[in-house]
Length: 185
Image 1: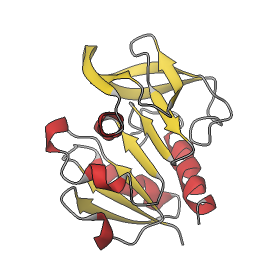
Image 2: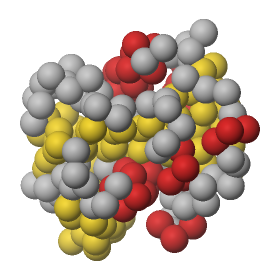
Image 3: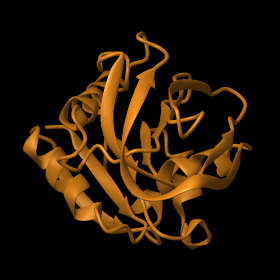
Image 4: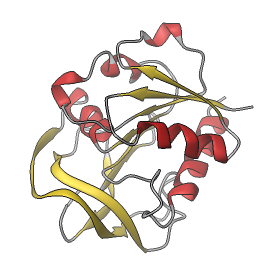
C-alpha cells in the first residue's frame, strides 16, 4: 500500500489532508514539521498549509528526500522559496471560491482535471516567481501561479486546498499524486 506522510505546518485543514488520502486508499501519517525526513518511511510527502512561512521547520529537507513532494498553499510557497522562487502578498486574502484554469494537460498532478475547475483557496500570500526548473500548470484571475510542477524532481504545488469539499476535483488531484508516488518506486 502506498504511504504518504503529511507534514503539519499548523494549517487548519491538515487533518483533512490526511483524511482525504486515507479515503483514496493511501496509508497516511501526520507528522510535525520538525520531524527529520530520515525518521519517516514514505512513498511521498505532502507539505500542508499553515499560517506562517517562517515556521517551516524542516520542510526544506523533505525536498531532498528522494520522494515526490506536494505542497498545498503554504507548502507550495515553501517549495518555491526553498528552490529559489519568490513569495509575496496577494491582492485577495481569506478563503474563497476561485475558478482555476489548467495550463498543462500533460502534467501528472493537474493535467487530468477539467480545463476550468473550481477550488477553495487563500491568496493572502502566493508564489510570485517560479523557481528554476518549475513550470506554471494552473492560473486564475486572482493569482498568476495557482499550481506549479518540476517533474524532473517530482516537486509539485497548488495554491488551493484539494482536501476541502468546496474544491471540485480534490480527490482526483490526490489520486494523481498517489499515482506519481507509485510510479516513482
